[in-house]
Image 1 (cartoon, one colour):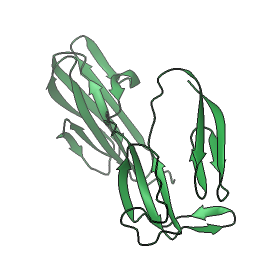
Image 2: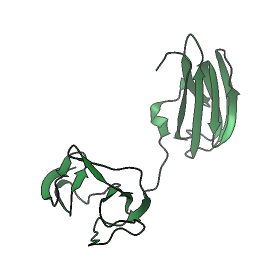
Image 3: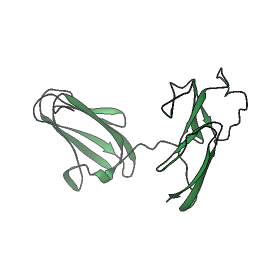
Length: 206
């Protein structure tokens, strides 16, 4: 990426350290916008360096959404975000103040079904998914039919993605059995890429 004519956006949450007035200061070269809980409090989308401040009344311990947008035109590039509040001199907001958005996990796995899976050079190539749904587990036996919504009982593919939460630390054995090929991916890879393949492998999970 070039050192000029670029932009950036930061999004997340922070917890207010105090109840009362908190002043935010953006020191930038060039433009900046700052939102707190969806309210635009600094809007200086300018081709020039500057320091811009706004004060917000907050409640100690409460989480607030924050979004910062920045662009650099030419020359020097700077983006710093400070705060100050009663008992705290002006400081760059520390990393410990921020968290990512908390995205609730959806039960089950997302499954994408594909028409016309084809083998090329030992790998299965899938086009854009025809159907996207949610499965509570990977346990399908279509026999001579196909997943609902697909037209052909042959040459289709499926991809399940998601996360698992293990109950205890230790080693877990994962096994795949399919007709025809299957591949299982995690931090380590269990691959059963041959037609009619079935494999097991033990992998550590901590």
